[in-house]
Length: 69
Image 1 (spheres, rainbow, N blue to C red):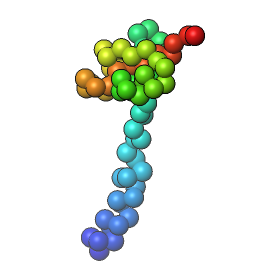
Image 2: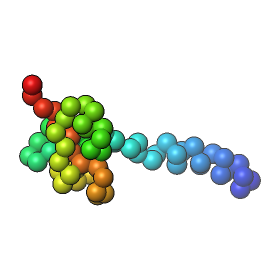
Image 3: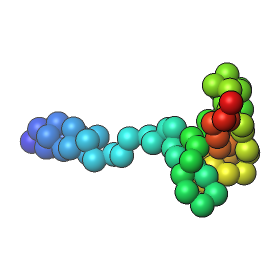
Image 4: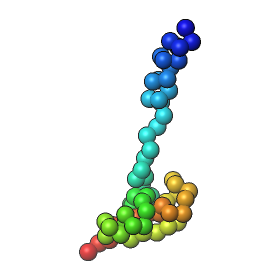
């Protein structure tokens, strides 16, 4: 009985977990960039700022802004 209940509840709990919002939007006043690593940002020809990504509180992920060229 416990196994049946667990088999029923486990998929429901897994579906309730929110998906990772990576790349999360970031920016100072409005979300104008995406949270990413410095290397990924430079590959996308972006401008990377470490402190502007508040969603992920780690040092290697910052906000990548598009450069206008």
